[in-house]
Image 1 (cartoon, one colour):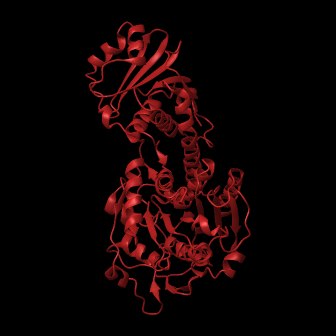
Image 2: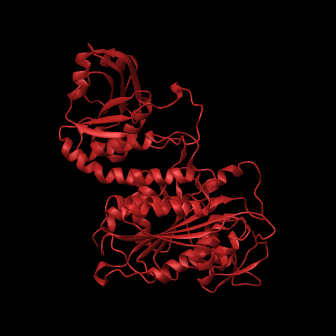
Image 3: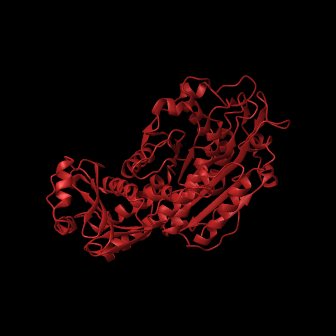
Length: 504
């Protein structure tokens, strides 16, 4: 992770300087000092570039003088409207422009200490890079930025605000890493093992294999996994930040104190590779299906973030991990499976597998933990990409208050949600001729019927389903998200917890 520090405003003796500038904002502070030290080179360059300080508008000035290698100026728009998201994005844009500098100073301008920490967060998130399997990169192709100093009049306060944000960034990085790993490395067992490493943060980690899942009656989950040589896993992560810190509790029913309230529950689809099974996907683009576990990755990253910042909340994360492969033992179209709830499902398409895994995990979650809310994340349907593209994830919910809280958290973090409908007419599309339901409802409203399927297993709990198929992976760089795994959902749900559930 990029090393971040905070200090009083001062021009660096050498290296790079980044300035976040608002529209129609006269030079002051470090910006004015840098302009004076360079003989007005910064002002001349901005005038020549007709710089207006629009959001993420960027000008880079090479070797302007005063020992500086470069000055990067990034617009934040109107300063009065530049809340955390605008500052983060501008800082992320600056970090991308500073990638070849070993160290730099970033001046966010006249902002509160919390916003200075937000700038650090944006820069750190943008600087992430996965290079575990790169062996022949040229030196000039490798990012060099290792240290970033945030300039602020109250560095101690900014540093204090940065602590919890750093924990969230670490959770984001955990998610990005597991989502990026190749499928021959990140099998269900390997993913579960990495989750066990999160115990160092104070999380209680429980891992169940095929024998335990069979005893629990996970017929739908095991049906998905039966074609693969890599056995499935169910991972349960618990954080007891409100009812007992990091104390251990026996397995079984949640032992949270009565006055601590019920836990929040987050459930993730974790198909570590999805061929479609016997209903085989087309070869083109199938390599992308390594990130069909992005929902489970986000849940694990969220739980790491909550534990890392010592969130005052009780939360549980459940990851349903399996590989969907074709083989002589694979599930067939036409099979009927019995779920943990006792309901039966006619499997008409083995590529509609994520909902089968989630069906058992959702039921188990509400039965074991009796949570106050359940939120699942899943790269569930291509239909949601057709509906919403890559800008919003689909939100389905049976609880209006929960839906509105999620939408607000998405707007605050830039992980945007769009509310989609649920209804009886869609539910009827799941009617089977020989079982309680079928696992697909046809092409029309495919993301909606998938959500309707999941709703049959929440048993009346307040519940939301986030279909992140269009937002889990970025095909191009964004201000705070380099191309690749986005960790969509980690910051969104951390913000939801912080704004509405901590301490209560």
